[in-house]
Image (cartoon, rainbow over all chains, first blue to last red; front, top):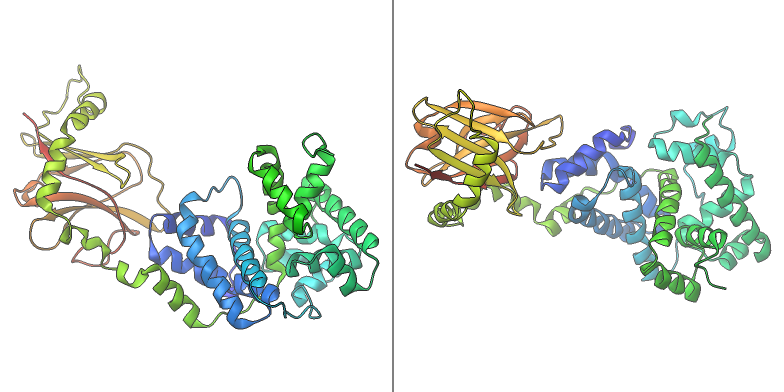
Length: 195
Length: 236
């Protein structure tokens, strides 16, 4: 099962390097290792399978063409690919009437459990890249409502007022929660804190 | 308020730009300023690195197999398996003349890298080939010494090759399939026996392909992309 493979940065980096040299087999290996994660992400943003599949296609076409410009010292492979797929998904989202499911859970069940209580569900056991594990740890230190607000905004490309409406919380409060959450995440990631 | 001199505001805006909550006119203004503001670009990149991994928190879903087929089709990957037969569409006669045109450059390289004066065992080189990538950067230098019957292959730069890959050197004849000469490591020099396969009159071109570790699984020629190519040049 490709989605149970660990997302090892070194291996992904080697496949990206091969992709940059036009190696179709390396590109296929990269797709097999990451497509379930990236498709799950596109689905969360777009809600509709057809749209998410188009965004995934757009993303991998861009990864093929852009692999030569990828610099490992600037971003981990998964971070780079996630950003590409996010941008392609948001392009599709802005080009269509929004009807993704804002009421569904933003995060994967296991991730949600781990964020809520890292002692019961260790973050280390999640099938995430090391960057995502570090972020998961830092997000677990946020208040649950704040975490939900950050996730909603990020996954659904919402404005402050849309988040406020969704959460039934005043917009001023939402702005404060987001600002504080971002400050805390930055400080926590800088310290490299781990559970 | 100018955002150029307000470090705190700059960081806050970059964060909300990446999170997505910076919208409408404010987002467009931020993008306009960022175009000429390297510091702001860096702040945004840093926030990208912090927040992008959140994408991995979504539950994984297996895409349908037709998604891969569509990607393959859009990129023309199915046709690419025959791409190594590039010489069938290129004039091999032209390749020989390109080899001659780059003779001067090759000689300079050889003089500086190979034919170092004063070496007791300096080889008597009578054939040279400079293999270059598609941006005309020379990556490999081949020198042949007919008297001793030795061809030396030098990688001019350390060429990073993934652990599961190898570089393979081929002689491409005017007719028939390419002939494998050697599977190369990622660096250093390799000595080969000088044979008709490598330096015969029918050799139009030399090429290096990227292959699975240990070399191409196909006897008939390369399976991976051609990274470097060039032609033999005879020198006196």
